Image (cartoon, rainbow over all chains, first blue to last red; front, side, top):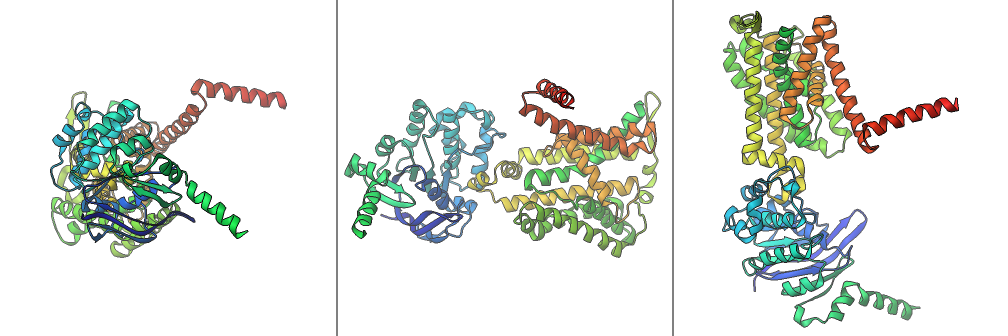
Length: 246
Length: 308
C-alpha cells in the first residue's frame, strides 16, 4: 500500500508543555483511521500539526513521500490535506455558499464542486443562501466537512465529528461520510468510541501525547481500548516500575 | 441651513474616501496605520509633482498616482507592517508614528514647505457651481468628488462582496486561521488590502489638493478626520464609513453656521458623543440595559450622599 501520510517522530509543543511526544505514524492511501483518546491526549494538536496550523518542533510530516513539514496551512490544502476543524470555524457573516466557494477557489481542482458536495450532503442545498452563523450544530458540521471536501483533498482530517451534535445530526453526518469511503484517506478524531469503531477501519488511541494503541477494531478488545484510552497500562507500569525501583 | 446640509453631505464623500483605507486596514489586517494621513498627503504631493514637475494633465497624474500608491501600500505591508505586526500591539503603533514622521520630513525635503494646490490646474472646476431649485448652489468640484467617492466605495464594496479576492479578504478578517484552512494566504490578502487602503488614501489626498491646499505636515489632521469618520460609522464597514464621513461633514458644515471656529469642533463633538455612546452602551449591556445602568448610577450617587 502507498503511504498517504507519514509522521516521523513529530513533537508538538504548547509553550513548555509537550503535547505530542515524538509520535510516528503511517496512514495508507484510502484508509479510514479514527483517533481516540481522553481530553488532553493531544488529538486536536496532532490534527492541527498535520494541517499545518501548529508548528512541528521536531520530526517530519510527509504527504505521499513529499516533505510538507515546513509548508504553511494554505499550502498544505493545495498539496492535498484538508481539515474540518474542531468548533467548525465557519465564517458566520458569510453565506453557506460563500463559505464553500472560498475553499473551492483556493483549493485544488477535481471532482468535488458545489453540486457534488450538495449531493453528498443533501442538507446543505436549502441552506446555501443563509448566513453560516445562523445554522444548527449539525448543519454547521455538514458545511464544515463540505468546505474541506470541496478543496479536493487526498487526505481529509475531521476533528471532533460528533462533538455537540444530537444523535440524529451525528447519524446524518456519518451517512454522508459513508459515501466518501474509498474515495480518499480519512482521519477522524472521535469521542464516541462505538461510532469510531464502527466507522473506521483502524483505531489509533492516544494518551498524553503518545500513541498507546493502534489496530483494526475487529482485532482489539473493549478492555484493551479502555486501558489505552485512560492510559491504564502506562499508569500501572509506572507504578510497578516505581515500586520495583523502591 | 439647507445649503449647509448639502455642503456637509458633499464634504462627507471626501471624508469617506479618506477614512475607507483606514477602516479597511483595521478591519482586515487588524492594523492601525497612524501614517494614513501622511500617506494621503504623499498621494497629493506625487500628483502635484506629475502636474507641476512633469507637466502632465491632472487626469493622467491621478491615473499614475493611484497605482503608484497602491504599489507603495503593497510594499510597505510586505517590508514593514508584516514585521511590525509580529511584535504585538505596541510595535505597529510606534512603527507607523515613525513612518509618519519620516514621510513628513521626507516630503518636506523633497517638495519644500510651501502650501501647494491642484486648484490652479483644474480649470474653472474650483469655483464653478450648479444651481438647484431653492436657490441652492452646489460646487461642481464637491459634486464630482462626492460622485467619485460613491463610485469608488461602491467598486470596493463590489470587490469585497462579489469576487474571490473579496471573499478571501472577508474570510481572513473574520478568522485568519480558518481562512488558511480554506487555502487563503493571509499575507497575500493583507498586502492586497494594504494596496487598496493606501491607494484610497492617495485619492483622498488628491481630493484635498484639488479643493484646498496641502503641506507636508498636514497628515496628522487628516488622520484625525479619518479616525472620526471611522468611529462614527463603525469600523470595518464601507457603508458605515460613508455614513460616518457624511455625519462628520454635516457636523462641520452645520457647526460653521454657528461660528467659523466651531466647524472643526462640531465634528470632534459628534465623534466624542458617538464614542461615549458606544462605550456606555457596551457597559449598559453588561449591567442589564440602559434603565438598570441609570438606576444603579443614581442609587450609587445617593449612597455616596448618604455617607457624606
